[in-house]
Image (cartoon, rainbow, N blue to C red; front, side, top):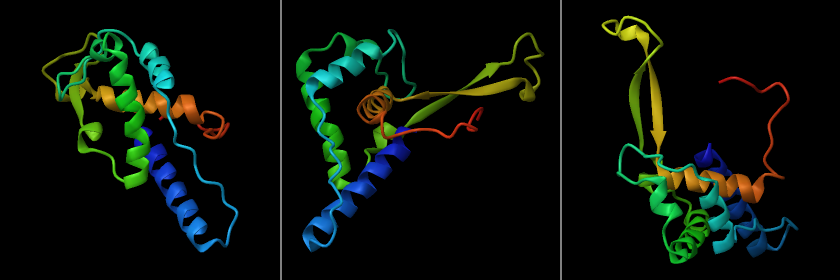
Length: 145
């Protein structure tokens, strides 16, 4: 979800930049200014002891880190939107098989895949939801998967 929202912000930012240069439209620029306080708020919303599968980072690394980390993460999202690319480490996910209830574990169809997203990805997701929740919405009939 965060990847799609970032792509939308990148697209809106590029449209507004071109219209500013051409001076032909009054499209407002997308505000992607994130403060270290907002990052700290979103870090506090992360659940404790949640791992990502790929890099070995834990949410506790962010929760108990110095506020200097919040400042650097606050610089990261505008840079991602400005340059128009998401670092590959944010897109890494690890899928692990989990057995479905009390079923026969010898049958491969009795497992469901659980995906562990990166901690950076979860943090960026929370930042986008926190910052742009008034702009992002869902349709009333949208439910399930």
